[in-house]
Image 1 (tube, one colour):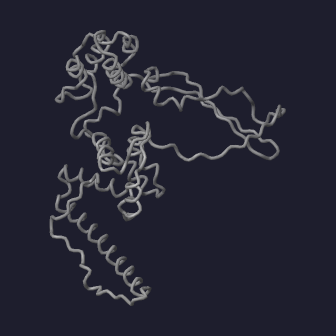
Image 2: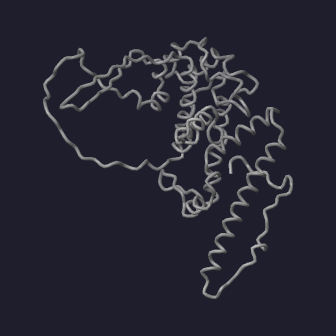
Image 3: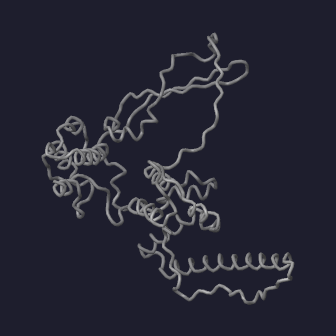
Length: 328
């Protein structure tokens, strides 16, 4: 049954994502009759931004095939997986949601108070359960009364509540992957933020989970319940790694250059040379720091210990000796 499910869900690689939309939608309706009503509302002529063959590298996203199956024979897990993938596919052929947004601004004792509300007038693709759940926070609006500008209203009551700020919640694997994708939100520099937003963030959709798995394998991260936290070893690593290596802009830059290498726009030698120079610069920086520390130690030592600074080797890298992985 699992093999049959995979054959139903996995995509024919040679087909363009939007070519056989009608047939795929029909197979979804046959495989899972519960979705037939939503499928009937789909417009296969809608050209979603999802269908962009130029952004496909190793493979595109997983979508159902044109082969229908007997959904009643699926196990509970198979049914959930198929429905999740099918609903995401269906959402691409439904119109965008429409809202009626309003806001109210009040002044009480020279203090400004405001309230915002949003009413969904046309749900569009939000009728699809899985897509709506992810965007649920945006739907939580409140109904506001109809008011006119300049209207004076009585204050019915005042409540004062004392609350404390809370630290950001710990990451789960899902939220960490989302943060890697949207790493631009953690950067303050406008130019760097724009650069990261235009790219894929840290890693790619196909590699982010593998990056997290590798960090767990190396004992830099660990899972506590549903949370992913840094281990003592991971925290120590963060303290000793140079700031430039922890900057997300560097990883995004590597990813972009590697993509240009793949497209033949940048020679691989140029990329390797830049990484070698980066490592050399950092090693020289560490060498200078060690010299300073040893010099301080020699002055502070009661025994008058001295060191021959010339014995500390200068960082040298042979051509091709360093080829950093873009995800390390």
